[in-house]
Image (cartoon, rainbow, N blue to C red; front, side, top):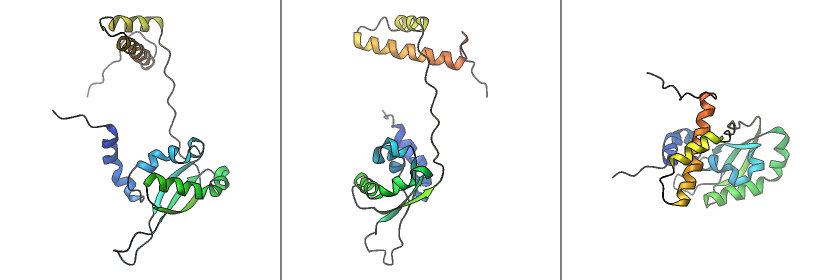
Length: 172
């Protein structure tokens, strides 16, 4: 039987050509930027591309690259002062000295839209979830299924616009 592949593997395959054009070896630095520099700095900066120096001899070892980072203008000076620390963290992330220089480009940082919080499950949704999971013998599993079921039903209510009717399937 074929195993299900993690979504990360699929995304890596789809995005690899795009990020390779920007000099990245993969999506890992872009995706892991908050873990590398911390949530606070990641909110105001994002890696744009990696510029590798040209080598006169293709057999020579690669010189360190330049990491280009877009940064909000108000945080550019702070990021400039932290450049050695950021370079060290990126190199630690990769496991070798691949970045030797940081170039800051001031401009707006594109932030992903924050999803709206899901509504809290109501008494009717909790009751439906409890009823659906009532035949599960394991108490811990039953509790987890009840919480999941009530959350799914509450999310369904939000997407239905608060009406009591189920979502209408679209015909192609």
